[in-house]
Amino acid sequence: MARKHISKEAGCYKCRYDTETINHVLFQCPLARLVWALSPIPTPPDGVMVQSLYSNIYHVLNVQKEYPIEDIQAEIAPWLMWRLWKNRNELVFNGKEYEAECIIRKAREDAEEWKGRKVAEETAVKRLEVQQPTITNQANPWRPPPSNWVKCNSDGAWHNERDTSGLGWICRNETGEVLWAGARAVTKTGSAILAEAEALKWGAETLANFGYKNIIFETDSLQLAKMINGTEEVWPILHPTIELIRHHLLQIGTFEVRFYPRVGNKAADIIPKESITFVSSIPMLYSVVPMWLKYQVWSDKSVY
Ligand SMILES: [Zn+2]
Image 1 (cartoon, rainbow, N blue to C red):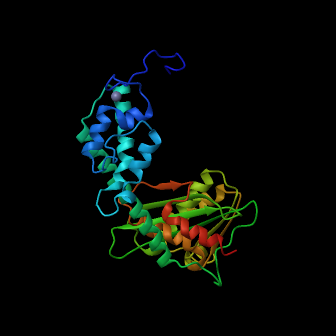
Image 2 (tube, helix red, strand yellow; image 1 turned 135 degrees about the vertical axis):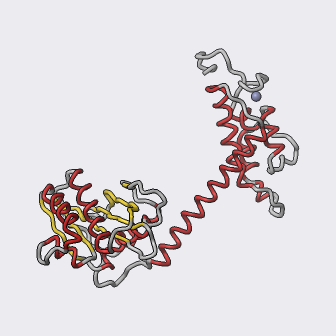
Image 3 (cartoon, rainbow, N blue to C red; image 1 turned 30 degrees about the vertical axis):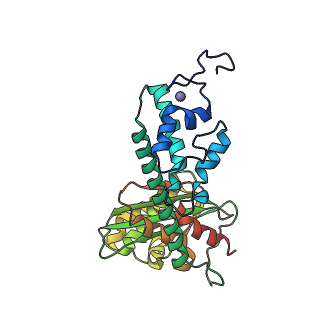
C-alpha cells in the first residue's frame, strides 16, 4: 500500500525498525528471530536469517534433510510461519500481541492437529481398502441410472450392542457422480428393517424437497421394497414410516423402489456404518463426497 501511495506507513507494526516485507515479518523482525531461536528448528549455519525470503523458507522447510540424525520436529516449521503471519494480523487488526512462547505453543498445537487429521484420513482410507476390495467381476455391481434419472441407494445400520442406529443414502446421476449424500446417527430403532426404512424415508424426503423428478430408489431389504410397492402386507411396526415414504414418493414425478443385493449397495452400506459412529446426532448432508466414502464411489464407478 505504501508503494502505491495508499498508505504512508511502510514500517513493521511490531518493531517499527524496518519496512514490513514478508521476509521481515516471517524471519527478520526481532519477534520472528526470537520465535525461531526458541523453536526446535536450528538456525542456518551462518547464524542469521539472510535477506532472501526464499532461502529462509528453503532452510526451514528442509531442516530435516540437512540434519537427518537429530530429532528436530521439522513438521512445526510451516506452522511457525503461519502463526507469525496470524500474529501480525492480530496486531494490525485487533491490536493484540502475543509472546514468542505463545506463538510456538500454538504452532505446536496446529502441527499436532494436522498430524491427527492426516492419520485419521489415512486410516479411513486403509479401512475401506481392507473392507471393500475393488469390486470386479461381480454379478451385481452398482449401475448408474438411465439419463435424466438419478439413483438413490439407502441403507441402515443397526447393532444389538449400540445405542444408536446409522442412516445413510447416496444419490448419483447417470455418470455415477455423487449429487447428494446423507449420513446421520439416530436413537436406536426398534429393529434393523426400521433403520432401513428410516434411511429410505430420509433420502426420499430430501430429494423430493430438492425437486428431483425421476428417481430410482434401491434398498438391500427385499421386504421393505415389497412393502413399499404394495406386494407384501405392511408390518404394523413399519406402518407410520412407510406411510411417510409413500407421501414423499408421491411428490416425485416418476419413481421406482427396487430391491438390490448388498453388493450393489456398497456405497450406501458404508454410510450408515460410518454414521453409527458419529458422536453427534446432527444430520450430515454432503454435496462433496466425504473422505471416508471416496474409495467406494470410485470403485463403483470403475466397474461399468
Ligand atoms: Zn518488525
